Length: 217
Image (cartoon, rainbow, N blue to C red; front, top):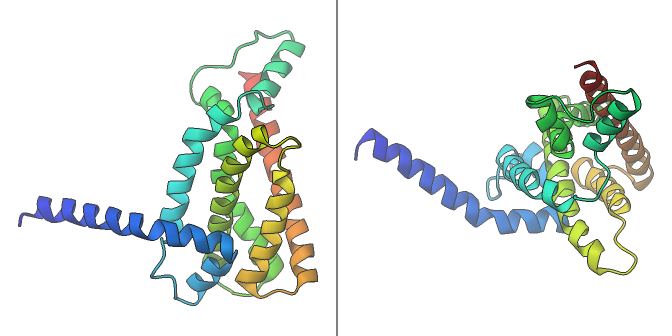
């Protein structure tokens, strides 16, 4: 077999292997939140989709679906438009990367704040001296959050009183911290609240930075 054939065979086998492991990985992600991150730290994740690959697949799905499902919701693009109108500027976004980032801000946040979340977890939990263990936790939780958001948006349109995705995300974070780092309920709750606050501040910082950059152009 040629080297080119070997390459494509490896890609095919890797893709099929990943596809076979996705259902079990997703089930464990929600049935035992945090346990996949714990398995990574203990070198016991071989039977599941690797964290970076799982995150990339979930991010691509979120990146493609969320802009269509979030129509009618307030976005950073709306905020930037409002700022431009209020300042007497044309109600248009500059072409190119800024417009693309504004229209896909929620997807961009899920990428840009992963290292920040890993750093916060590393500082607050300090269970492991390896930053990569906490980065894997951030990756796994982002997958948990992205898929949960994609599920709750259409469900909220069918349920009379909607679904409180924020509460579900906060509960999922606390339970994930317990599962990944073996924290008590109180410490997991306090740590989850601190991480959530830091995440919100990071999101606001990126949003206002984008608005300020757009107003200058």
